[in-house]
Length: 119
Image 1 (cartoon, rainbow, N blue to C red):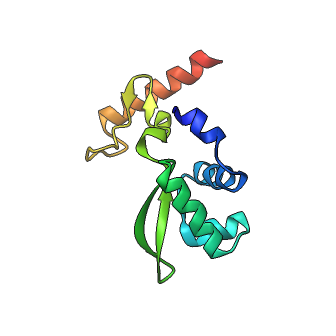
Image 2 (cartoon, rainbow, N blue to C red):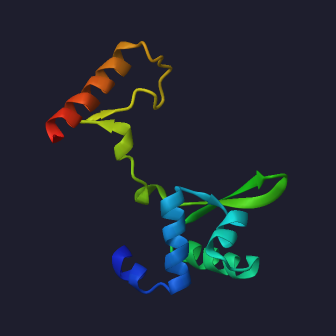
């Protein structure tokens, strides 16, 4: 079953939860259920269902002094396009770069060139 087909099979609450994770880029589970305006038990059930179906990932974390989970999209569903300028990956990924470095300047110039050509 493709991911698109499986997404159509989600309940309305699951679709709303998945949309929230997508829009936020990641959210603490303690905020997840509040944003969905459901109780914590129902929020946990929604997350569990999305986890089982492979739509989200969850990791233990401490937030506001309490143990909770951080809910994110799997790496395959993340949008990395903002890190690209043409075919160049941001020099800040994995390198010790300063804003005055040549690689950063080239990356910025690629962004400007892309923007100019899209006009």
